[in-house]
Structure formats: structure tokens, C-alpha cells
Length: 487
Image (cartoon, rainbow, N blue to C red):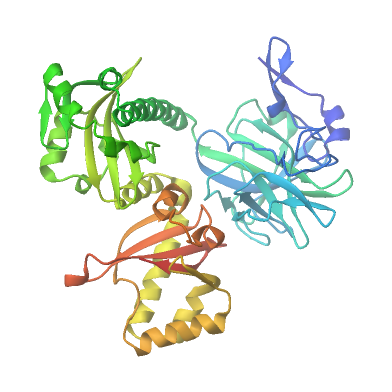
């Protein structure tokens, strides 16, 4: 049941939003959907900030193809704008911790920001990043959410550079639109934004069902591997089912034979392994070259397209656990040790390709690296410097903060004929999903590369094909800059 709040009441408390839809259950409103001034919620204006304070988290609307607009209101209607002529950029923060620095409340110093709708934009914005910690970045400060509300998709939306006026009475309950309000104090009002899912929520419901299956598969795989490493054979057998594909060699159909074979894996050396899942993917979504042709054929005999492969990252290798997911249970039906850790990057890339919000940013990252590699082949130092940015992560071992030092490094490389890392792009994925690949001590990637930045994998030609390089690309306001390299 839904209730529309008084327009007159909201016009006095929240002029930017003259209405709100509050979901009620047993007479109690869901405060996450009711806009307000935040009260004492950690991270709200007016509270005492400590290192434990946290900015509000609000999930994006249900549905896909998310578009961003700016909003103004007069207490009776809304003006939705297909541009952002304000002095503030809407962004997603990587960390919700709020601290005091010099008597001023601000995001934790380690926080990175993924800009989503740049100030001064004359077009409708596109949500290209994932996350739920919203912020606006202005000339002097970064601010976090003070209140928000949800609704159905407005009946009309503007085109690039245009505006539409929507009377409050035309807005309906729903979850396809998210209205965001920012303020640093009771008098200082910052821009208000509207994020709308332009495709139906039914697509998201399918994704939600898939996410539930992924979680079941992850839990089953972790229980299996934990029991295997303990070691506890009886606990292992409670998590498995037959037919079972063991190391890609055969599908074992006999339960007792499987028990004897798995017993051989209960070696003390295994106890040193980690068993935290790094990625989960539907079997049907995986590139076939992750497994050999014979391995893929064996898995195909026992798995449906929606059954899961759970990947566990380990130093210089990865382990794949196959899980059959049914309505009430998930059972492990296969294991493959010794995969390349790039397997995780392939999975991350597949998920990025399915995220329509990331398509444009991904293409910009690809084009940026293509231009960089081209400039490297022609030894065009000036073009290279136009494509890079400092601070620069130099192989994850050292940070270069001075552009002249970076220019000198590229100049020396070109003079010595070392060229650029790789010649052919074969994989592109966001840094966040494959973070565990670069978790070696001493690396400085995390200080420079954000979770929403891109990793473009390259490889050499001919005999150098096995040499894999990485270029890290930051995409902001439709432009890509390379901020580091590694191998």
C-alpha cells in the first residue's frame, strides 16, 4: 500500500521535491524511501562526525539503461532538465567513511570518486559506474546525500539540452526513478538529481534471481573447499553430487568411487590455501577458451547454462568449482585446479559486457589504449604524453608524480627500442572485479587506480604472445587517460 504525502507539507520542508511515496507495512513507513533532513543518521548534516560516521548508501533504481537528469521544483511541479549546468558533478564514492580534517567534515582521505554526470554537461547523463554512495563534487567541497525518494518512471523525460515540466499529481508510486537531494547545511542547497531506469524492471527481476543462485553456488563452493582443506572427507561428501567432473579428466558417476578419489586431495599442503570465492559466473556465459575443449565438453554434459562456475584466486593460479543450482539446494559437481589467474579477468570482462551502463566507458578505454599503442609504434612521444596522466603507477612498484619524469621515462624507452607493453588488446575489465589479481605486497595500484577504472590487457605478437601487459585507464567526462602500466 502506498501513501502520497501532502504537497503543501513537503513544499515547506523539501522545496525541491513537492511529493513523496512512502511504502508502508503494518502502519510503519520505510524510512529509506521517505525524503527528510536526515535527523541523526550518521553522515547527515548537523551530526558530530567521527572516523566511524558513514555517508548514506542508496541503491540505484530497479531496471536498466539508467539516465541522469537535474531537477528543480516550485512546490507544485518538477522541471526535469536534460543537462547539468550547475557547478557540481554527480559522482560515486568508493568509501562511505566521513572524518574531520582541520575541523571540516569530509570523506576519508583514501576515498576515490567515479564521476557520473559532469558539471556543465549539455546532455542527459548516463550512469556508467556501480556503487551506492552518492556525492556531488563542487569547487570547494564534496557533499553526500541528505535525503532521497523513489517513484515510478516520470511520464515524460527530456532529450539532450531540453526540459520538461511534470506536475506532482502525475507522478506515481514505483521504483524505476530515484530522486537525490544534497545539502551541507540547512541553508545551503546543492543540486538535485534524478536517476531513471529507462528499461523495465522485469529485466532486473531476472538478474535478482540469478544473483540468488550465485550466492547459493558461492556458499556451496566455499563449504566444499573449506572441508577439503580442513581436511574433513565426510563434510566434503555432504556438499557434492554425481556425476562429478574431476580435474577435467572424466565425469565420475559412482558416489563411492568419487569419495575415494576426493580422499587423495586431502593433503596437508592444501591447508595453506585460501578458500574465499573471487568470482561467480553462469556456465553458459563463460568464454569456452577458459577450459580446454575436452574439459568444456565434460562440463557441458553435467551443467546447464545457468549452473555456476565459482572461481577462487590463488597466487599465480586459480581454482574453478562447478556447482549445480536447484530451487532448494546447490551441490558441487566438479573441480579444476591450476587455471591461469587471467580466468578471473575473463569473467570480469563478461560481466562488464553485460552492463549496458559501462559500454561507453569501456569503448573509450579501448580507444585510448589503441591510440597509445599506435603512438608507441611510431615513437610519437608528444601523442603519448597527451594520453597519460600523473600520478602514474609504474609497474605497481613505484609512483611517478612528475610529468617531466614520466616523459623522460617514455623517451628512454622509445630510444632503447623497448616500445609499449604489448601490441594487441585481448581483454578489458574494470579494476574492482579483478582487484585480487594484484594484491601482492608493495604494489601501489590501489593508491592510484579506482574500482571503476579500467584494466586493458595487451599481449605481444608471434613468439612474444605469452607476454601479457596491463594498462590502467581512467575515464572521466567522455575522455580516457592512462594512469599506469604493469605486466
